[in-house]
Length: 223
Image 1 (cartoon, rainbow, N blue to C red):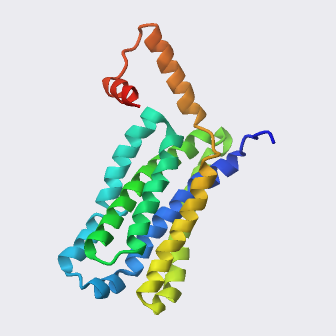
Image 2 (image 1 turned 180 degrees about the horizontal axis):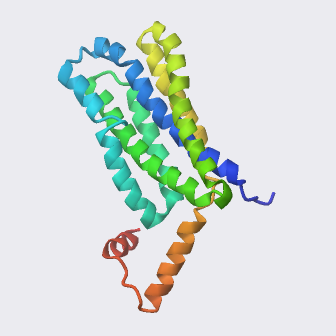
Image 3 (image 1 turned 30 degrees about the vertical axis):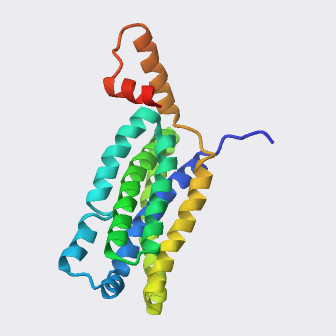
């Protein structure tokens, strides 16, 4: 069967699903925090660390800085595909956490994945969307960002009555969604804008009109 180019809306929806799982992870953590506190006997400092280093704070900021640089070096598709693997590893740590270091580590790893994912996916949407509908496509990502918390909060309100196992299941459902999105993203093409920019950069370097960035030269030699 011949490969067909995904429609503009399919590209947008697959990229926008990052907002669902990313925002959903924030609400899942908030909705189950009291259950984790009771289970692990966390004090105020530990709970503060979870908030400060979660996917809504410091680790997401670091992930965005790293992800943004990698997006420019290796492309949007590279980052927005593999950052979901980072996200799922962090989620697995949370789902199976039996102590505070596991829970905190999971929060930090998820945050790194979230930060990188938002940068890559939102950039890809803006670059791939048709010019006449660009704002509409970008708005889809914001809608998904609102949908994730709404769904997760509604589910949490029910399953959290089962105790901590309910909150673990909420996080587990986000892993399943992330795995499906990751599989779909493997079939998505790279940003045309990024490919054109790289080709133009290579042409200018070949003509001696532009010097190759030292960081990019070193990283490419290591790959």
